[in-house]
Length: 484
Image (cartoon, rainbow, N blue to C red):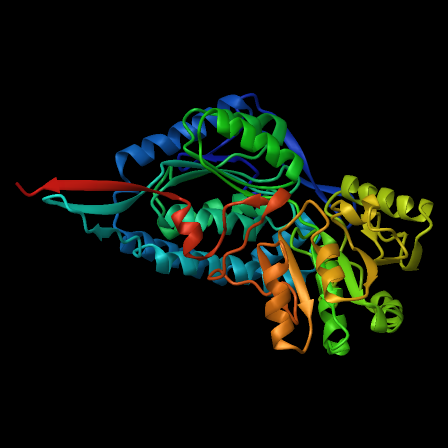
């Protein structure tokens, strides 16, 4: 039995698979070929309402929130185990849906998703309160409680991982969840619904509604039965999410756009630096909010590094994501490909030098774009200041540390950044000055569920991963007992 025969793209509400109330369905496209592979139910407001009500009833009944943290942890450990047991099938599904190279899907997406649930399973019983010393003749203490119903709205680029970074801590804390995956990439969310059920997560704890952002996402965001919104997506949509949630005074975690700077100093190990630089902008075909699309290079090594990139980047394997040797797959959708083309066209219009790439790759009708390196742009160019979200790297020289930091901090974003240097003192000094939620030194995209990440400025607020994430899905209650 194939995945599509077993999970025919229905909504998952209250532990039951069902079609949308109006019977609507939407197509899922294989971005490597531009062809339809299946359809899934397209939820409307009535379906979202049913999912939120199921989550609320389950939460109020205490079927999940009433369990001890240790009991919830055991179930989440089983979720992690099932992900590992079904790793090959999940990786193939994620590769088909997103266009990710199959090797990376297994090594990165599936592995990290399993680690997410395992990590938060271990934290599930760590929600300790505190005894507070007061001058009152009373015993005062605090305790942490779940928030209630969480709306998790996830993007197209890392469907499996970014669902785990929200559902993991939300479930560990005792909340129930309604998950709305991106309309382009819903398949792994539906697959995970079945694994949650198999792992022993009670019906109604996890609900999945597939559909568009303007309809299903908006209905979920505005539903009065939702107690918290966890959102990953563009800054523009994030502003809207925060505004609507603010009207209802709902807490929100916002992981938004990024445009990270990667600083290469003159004392860097260039061989290692080049590997990190390439990984930073071609990983997931550049569709990575914590990617490194802005390369800032000390002027003394600027020509050398540009020459190395001109030779190395075209050799990175691009092609069919099902080929284990592929490193760069297609863009996730045609609209994303067109956006990249528009930015490269703008760079050409502004007189930039295209060091390599700068064009589509015609292959099997898929949405491929050659990895592109661009030099000789002014810092105020939109190509540098805005988030391209594709396999495009801009390169700028700097003369000293102060200029490097000023250029790095010159965009509205502040999600990630990177430093290449052999000086430990410089690494710490510059890291302190960079406006970013996470700073990597001498590598890129070193991520683990124990290490929190999130943004500053236009890259959002709140943190995913780490104990900080778990705290974001709880509320603090104070209890004061008179001893008179």
